[in-house]
Length: 215
Image 1: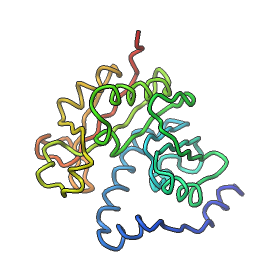
Image 2: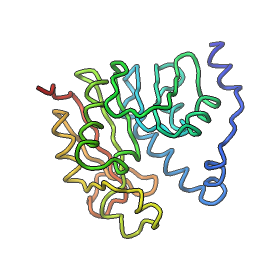
Image 3: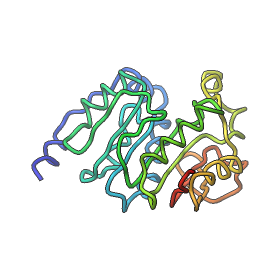
Image 4: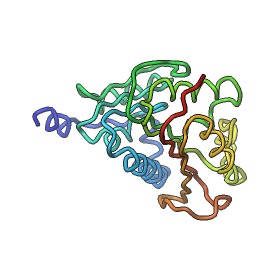
């Protein structure tokens, strides 16, 4: 209880990047938090969480809920520095690392939001899924979130430049099915998650359960 109170009293200092986004486009933060809220619901019964591409850790409190083991990994050193200052505890850790191919530990769940679209198709994509498989229990839950390929015409030029590996619902499902026995696809528009018509969804989630052991 003392650790929880100590964390609750901890002051949060936003990085310049996050502060800029909050001032210029606050609804974007609302959408990001809504994505984490969905991931947190899907992993509610999981006692340990690995997040690949955690950025500044804004979603970590929803995922670990103050009691779970959590590890967030990201390549962005300033983002990890902000995450450590704002959210780290005895059970909540952040590391600045290239997580592709990394075998850290075995977790009940792996979460990765807004990451796979930045990972090149081919060897890097394969390494991404191998990292998930190598760090999750056989009956674990994986949650992957990514913008829908059909949303590309409405994305900013900066966003399009960084999104080098876009998925539609069919490709996302078939790709995750190579690694998990059960895969459920959900749609999202703004902060609303639904099961509507995939091509008109701005954002997609794949929830994978029960990993397939790779030979």
